[in-house]
Amino acid sequence: MSRKFGAKKPELSELSRVKDRITFLYFEHAKLNRQDSALLITDSRGTAYVPVAIVSVLMLGPGVDVTHRAMELIGDAGVSVMWVGEQGVRQYAHGRALNHSSRLLEAQAKLVSNEKSRVAVARKMYQMRFADEDVSRLSMQELRGKEGSRVRKIYREQSQRTNVLWTRREYNHENFEASTPINKALTAAHQALYGLSYSVIVAMGASAGLGFVHTGHDLAFVYDFADLYKAEVSIPVAFEITAKYESDPDIASRTRLAMRDAFRDGKLLVRMVADLKDLLNVTDLETEVDAINLWDDQQGLQKFGVQYHEITEDDEP
Image 1 (cartoon, rainbow, N blue to C red):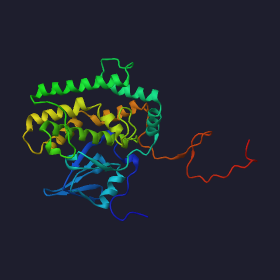
Image 2: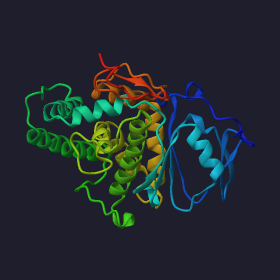
Image 3: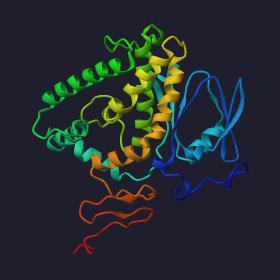
Image 4: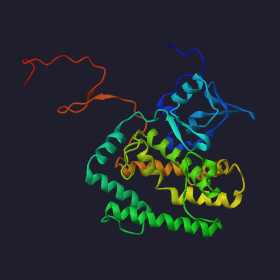
């Protein structure tokens, strides 16, 4: 059945690669519709047109209405969609990945299912945070303690650098407004980082739930992955924004805008794609695969869409 309205569905080869896209857009109290290959965003300030195929993830907050045609376009373009709570601090639902290959997912499942390889990947993650030290012989308990000390030191250093008072990290997901300005900024910054991390993970075809350090949650690997960049991106941004806008009631919005700039200026999407493939040891992944095969334990991959015939005794060698 042909489509009556709008542009035809693009081929995967026509879409922007995830590492070349802009990071995220956050909307609340707006209506999303479609005009040809653009997304129409309408709110009290007017209407904007967004070429959705160059966006990595859409974060849809409270008061957002999305038409069926808009979702059709978003799905065709391989954009990750996250329905989030107020200020973007909760994730309720998400959409499909851009990459149709399961290679990264299979590699991730194999690594996380073996204790030795799981520890090796976890150590690799910690090694990225301790570039000048050898952590290859440390246990998971020792690594957790070392990471805790590092994060506390980073908070102290950022507090001294920006003159923002720091006591401790506290976050009540039931009451965002009850937090201090710096904790509000940290929550908003981390959530933006989680959103981008989630988008890269699922767009590349990996699992958000198969974590190596975190476990037992459907976003365990998102937390693993985002932790690689907090010290460099979300924590400094949160302290800088708090230093400038501590009394601003909309500090979360200012933080998200600053995070988007930091993502772009630091070319974080490009780094994330490379880091993800390196962590899962799939460096030659082709991101524009749209093929499905049948698995065979003896003959390897077999063609899909072929009508196979029953093997009789006469056919056996």
